[in-house]
Amino acid sequence: MDNLANAGMDSMRRVNEITGKQVPTFSIDMLDKDALRDLFKKHKILCVMHFAGLKTVEESCNKPLLYYKTNIGATISLLEVMKEFGVYNMIFSSSAAVYGSPTYLPMDEKHPVGGCTNLYGKTKYFIEEIIKDICTAENQSNGVLLRYFNPVGAHVSGKLGEDPQGVPSKLMPYVSQVAVRRLKELTVYGDNYDTPDGTEVRDYIYVVDLAQGHVAALKYLKKDCGCKVFNLGTGKGFSVIDMAKAFETASGKRVPYQIAGRREGDIASCYADASLAEKELGWALKLDLAKMCEDLWHWQSNNPTGFRPDS
Ligand SMILES: O=c1ccn([C@@H]2O[C@H](COP(=O)(O)OP(=O)(O)O[C@H]3O[C@H](CO)[C@H](O)[C@H](O)[C@H]3O)[C@@H](O)[C@H]2O)c(=O)[nH]1
Image (cartoon, rainbow, N blue to C red; front, side, top):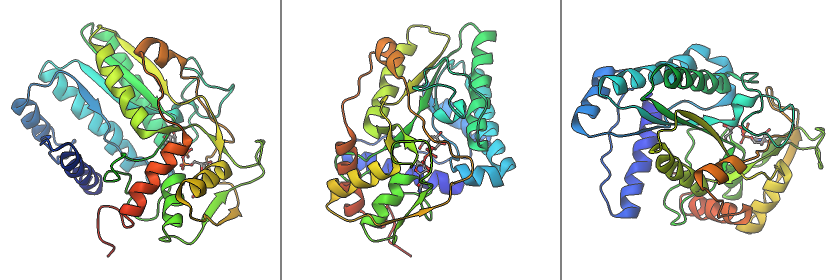
């Protein structure tokens, strides 16, 4: 988990720089329960927001054991240590991947889950089930499972953004690296889907709105909620080409692309019904596609090689 921990540490250093505060930051192997215990001994923890995990769809299909061990094994260690220390509240970073291929759109939280099209999604689904079972078995336990759609954007300061290791697998980090000329052109995975322009449609949510969803969930947890599930998305679908064009407008740079075959495990369209989060969490979207592209470009142009100088 070294790479994951390093990426997190880099981000936290930037958070401290931006806020001028010193948020305590540790890098630990979450499978190491003694390291986890040390953290719980040092701090009075009331709620855990659990974001840690590997997240590359393609890699997950080739390295099942690594993904099960890292994502599920570490979650179990964490839940065990939380229990030892009497911490019963968790907000879990889940994914729209738990829904698999949509049987209807937009997808609300009642949409069937578990028919995941990739192993990354399965790990999120299994973890959701574990948290649900704990909340059912133990009255004092509360969980909020936040199903993210496609987070995009960066902090408005231009100092904090997504810095994937190696060639990005996600669309918008790839697009922004093409715009900054770190990569030559975008490969569009398929243009013969049953969508308005033939390319795949997703629900891209501004990362700061997503973060606000966690703040809302934290307030909600105080209400002794049991286990609750919320979609965090916008309800709007944009195609791959829509996204490349929106980024060109925001950056003033060209994003050349070539069409290739479909990517294994992909689905044509996926977008959320996020009305439950609005109603119950009191969460509201504040930012739109133009703003997410603008802030992503601000970060990428300020940090053409991410957090590290290019080697
Ligand atoms: O180089 C690329 C990368 C992506 N895409 C297309 O862009 C869209 C978005 O792809 P991403 O890889 O950015 O994200 P996914 O929609 O595959 O979603 C994955 O990431 C999401 C969060 O970012 C959720 O976690 C979701 O559950 C998980 O499957 C897809 O249509 C994909 O085919 C390209 O055409 N070229």
